[in-house]
Length: 142
Image 1 (tube, rainbow, N blue to C red):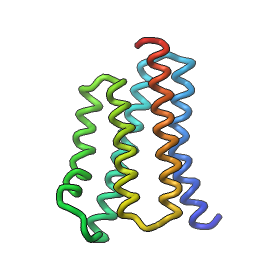
Image 2 (cartoon, rainbow, N blue to C red; image 1 turned 135 degrees about the horizontal axis):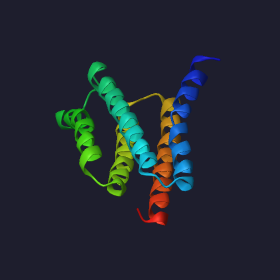
Image 3 (cartoon, rainbow, N blue to C red; image 1 turned 90 degrees about the vertical axis):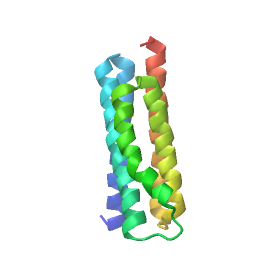
Image 4 (tube, one colour; image 1 turned 45 degrees about the vertical axis):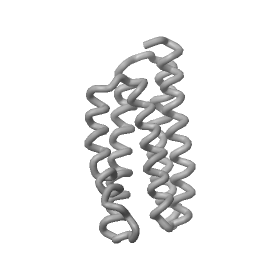
């Protein structure tokens, strides 16, 4: 297995829990499933924001505003408050927007086209899994 296929395997395997939990949520209408999905989303988002911060700050990308760097650093902290205090439906919508937003940031500043293609596919799949969870929630009116 070469380096790029290993990276691709790792990236796509990170999406597996999203789909497993989304499917389980249709079978077992349980708050634990929704909370687990939400916490996993928070962990992945924190990882993605941290990775973007690393790329922008340590590799000194030019033309990056201090506001963007501050946004990238503070967003995971704010998402912890979202996780604690916001209702699940709104939380999942916010997380979906964050997945899309961090993809747009990476798309602007990263140059690895293979990785960006993987990220685009994964971002769409993860947002779809968030929609599936929302459908599961609303079909049972939690």
